[in-house]
Image 1: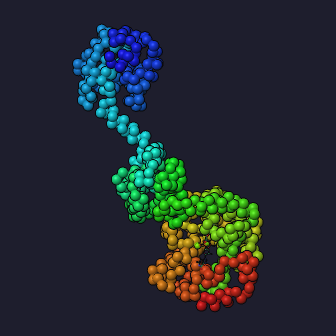
Image 2: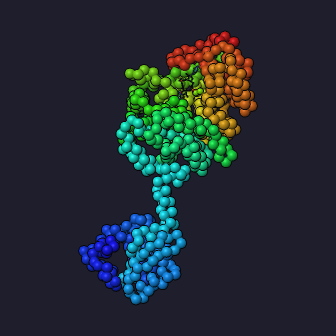
Image 3: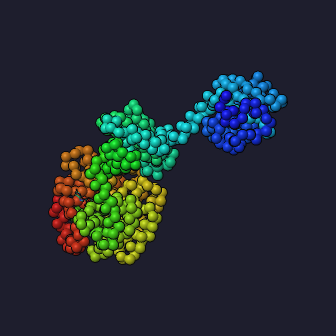
Length: 574
Ligand code: C2E
Ligand code: MG
Ligand code: MG
C-alpha cells in the first residue's frame, strides 16, 4: 500500500468520494499539517486552495493560494495527461495519471474529485520539484545564505560555519582559524563619495578577498565593511599567509569611475580551540586582534595573544576614568611656542594632557581617540577652548593661541556657538584665536563642516590645516576653503638635513601655500640646521623642540611677557 493511503487511514477505494471531509482519525487541517505526502487541492479552475505542509516545505514560498495547477505540474497542462485530468472532473472517478514533459521528472500522480474541485497526490515523490523549481530553490537558498552585494556568504552562514567547525574541532591538528577583516577608512569613502561608490568598493574588496583564499577556505561579509575568512584543518602559518596576501592585495588602488581609491585592510587572527572553543569566544579573540592591528597603524595583521586582553582592559579602565577626568580636574594644558622666522614669538599652541592620579601623564594621542569614540570630545574640547582663551588673555595681546579641534567636535552641530560663547566670555579678540584642524575634518560630512569653518572664519577666527602632507593632502580642500595657514607635518621636517625628497616636498608646500596666500608653519623643528634651511626657503613660522618644548601655563606666561624673548629666539634660529 502506498504511504498516502495509510496516512489518510482508509483503503484506496475510499478516495473516490466526492467531498474532502476525510474520514478516519485525521481532520483535514491535521492531514495538511502532518501528512508525509505531497498533496494539493484545487478549485474547479485548477487554482490551488490547500496543500500539505510537506509540499509547501519542498516547493518553498512560491506555493501560494491561487497558484495554477499547471504551473505546479506543467506536465499536466497538455496532451494525454490533460485529457485524463479533465476526465476525472467529468466522471468523478479518481485516476492515476502519468506526468511527463520537458524538464519534469517522469512519474505518477493520483487525481481525485473533491466537493470544491480536485485533489492531487504524488505517487512518485517529488515530481513537482522540477529542474526549474530546483534552480529556484537553490537561488532562494543562495539568497538566504549569501550577501546580495558581494556574493560572499552572509552573517548567518558565518555563525553556522563557525559553530560547525568548532564542534569538530577537538584536536589540535584540526585547528581552525578565524580571520576578522576590516577595511581602513571605508567610512570616509562612503561619506564623501556616496553609497554607490561605497558599494562598488565593497564588491571589489570582496573580489580581492576571494582572490587570496586557499582551497577549502570560506569568506563571509557579515556587516558593513566587516569581512571574515574561516579556515579549517590547516597550519597556523596558512592563516598568516592568507592574511598577509590580503593586506598586500589591498595596497593597489581600487579603480571606481576611473578614480583610484586607496583603502587598506587590517586583519585579526584567532585560532580555535586554542583562543576560543565557542564561536562567541573565538570571535571576540579575533576582534581583539583586529583592534590591535588597527591600533598598530592599520594595514597590518595581528594574531591574538593574551597580553592584548590586558591592553584592552587598560583601555577600558582609561575609558571609565576619562569620564571623571574633567570633574576631577585632571586635564591640563601645555603651551608650545610658535615662532616667526624673524625670531619673534607670535603665540602658543595649546596641547592637552591628562594627569591621571595613578598612571601619571597620559599623552593626547592615547586618550583623545577614546574620548572621540565615547562622545566625550565635545566636553573636553570646550574645556580646552575655555582654558586656552582664559590663559591667552593673560599674555600680551599681540600673541595668539592655537587650539586643536577634533573631527568629533564638528558632529554635534554646536561648535560655532561654543566658540562664539567662549570668545565672548573670555573677552579675547577673535583674531587671537587660531583653530587647528586636520584633513579628517574635511573628509567627513564635507558640506556641513565647510559651512562650520566658514562661519568661524566670519567670526574673525583663524583656521589652520594641521599635519599637512601625511594624510590625503587633497588639494581640493585648499581650493574650497581659505585656510590662514598650513602646518607641515613633522614627518617631512625630521629628515630635512639628509633627505632630498623631503626638501623637495617642503619647498613645494611652501610655494603652494604662498601662492594661495596662506602662511606656512613647520612642525617638529629639532635642530638649528633645519631651522636655517626652512627660513632660507621662506617658511613663515617654526615650531618644535629647537624653539621650545610645550610648557606649563605658568612658564608660558613668563615666557610671553619677557620683552627680550624674541631676541633669544633670533639667536636660536640663526
Ligand atoms: P599636533 O597638533 O600636531 O601637535 C604637535 C605635537 O608634536 C605635540 O605632541 C607636540 O608636543 C609635538 N612636538 C612639538 N615639537 C616637537 C619636536 O620638535 N619633536 C617632536 N618629536 N615632537 C614635537 P602632543 O602634545 O603629544 O600632541 C599630539 C597630538 O594630539 C597633537 O598633534 C594634536 O593632534 C593632538 N592634540 C593635542 N592637544 C589637543 C587638544 O586639545 N584637542 C585635540 N583635538 N587634539 C589635541
Ligand atoms: Mg596641532
Ligand atoms: Mg600637527
